[in-house]
Image (cartoon, rainbow, N blue to C red; front, top):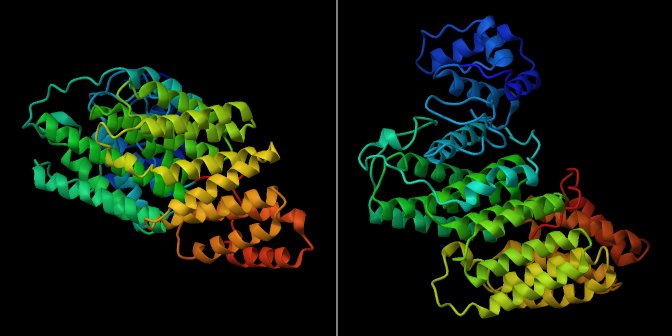
Length: 489
């Protein structure tokens, strides 16, 4: 079926630098390697895919995704190529293939994680593509997130009707029971604790691999209660994969995982979890110096969580929006949102069990996010450095659970706010505490924050201790370009 030029495929084709004849030969060779020796693609067929928008039959879309992933060194999915699978309906995909057709989430997460693991195995980095704008994601997902998920009418014993057979290293779909789900949920807690302590670099591949396995499990349609728990595991692992990817600078990959997490949470009927996943994408945007995009995502996150969101969840969302407002220099809005966050947090009387994904947002995190927001605002209003100092000190006093990365961020916030508040001696003390611990952590975001702090030391050049600190920072930080506006918590 044709539908006009496929500009997505055309753009990636130009980026790859192949001729149409070369791509045809590669498709035939790759298809034969995947068990389809009878496939015979030629130059004219490639031209029709690009110029006319003809959709090739299976297995060609998967073959193309593999070829472009290898060529470009980043995950390229079938949706990224502007292609649809057999049975997909609707208009041509827009951002990240949104909106996805019903029952596509398991297939998307399995395909994407399979590609991600392939890049890991071959030592590729996977960072060479721009992020989607917050407004584009928000527009694409707004109505979908607010609507109730469609009921899946598939037979509970028919794995082929739940998803299509996308993905890599996919095993035969089979049912799981309570013990297997409990083991999966426990693994999430282990990965979450490791990430908080050591950063995302060392365990990211394990999380992606676990998520790939869960995608395979979801190909079998379980009873509703079991299926909801599985979707919860998928959402948790997707958020972790996204956060770990963000932590080591794989920004487009991280954004895709956050989108997958929102889909998985909604499939499981957990709209607050979907909102939290989108708030992670918003935090990513502030870190990258795009607070306007973050606000677009936060409007979607807050409107999509529904009335069932706990006060603690709403408090967390307020702190993220406050941070974005602070980055824009909107002091009044920042203070209002932080005050609202405190009130909501205090009002959370634990009348309902706190979900595992929200237990990480404790009192220490509340103060840490307040400190970060005020420190960010202090770039526009220097008087905001004082409340930043108070909140960072409180956060550090409450950090008793081994979350080393958060402690490093609090120390950097304290040091940065001290520089702005004209207290270089105090700044030097906390900067050195952060610097002494950063070597035990694989978080690139700590490096970004230290670079931002290094910028603030410039006003004290000539002060002997600060000059020594600047030399130590220069020796310790990797020789990578600093991220504009990077101040992530």
